[in-house]
Length: 149
Image 1 (spheres, rainbow, N blue to C red):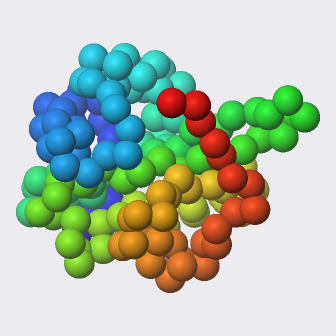
Image 2: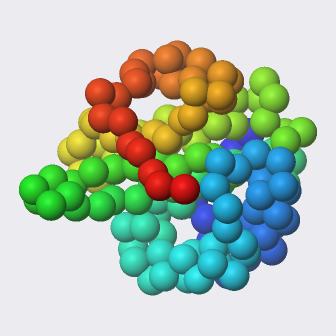
């Protein structure tokens, strides 16, 4: 398996196919390709975000994609959120795709920002991701996010 940076000129079609499968089979959130593509286009213009879009390939086929977002809270603290890694349902079992991409993102955040603390959204119902996070030494936060319906 090979990791590399996402190239919007040559990888967009493969990412769309991955996104479509992910939205049907794995995501925690609702979205659509148009919204996702709009965000991709914005990130492609920002060097830091463009370099933070990591993809995994196996035999020339995109099998995973991940990124993070930085947001500043009202106290002026930067927070880093590593997003759910996009994989196809059939590719994600016991291949280590999520682990490889999360490790790469962790290293990128640390080397680029000097930050070792970040957040990963993981519902309690996702036992496999929780196990991976524990393996990586990532513990459940004291901060609990709530949302209205």
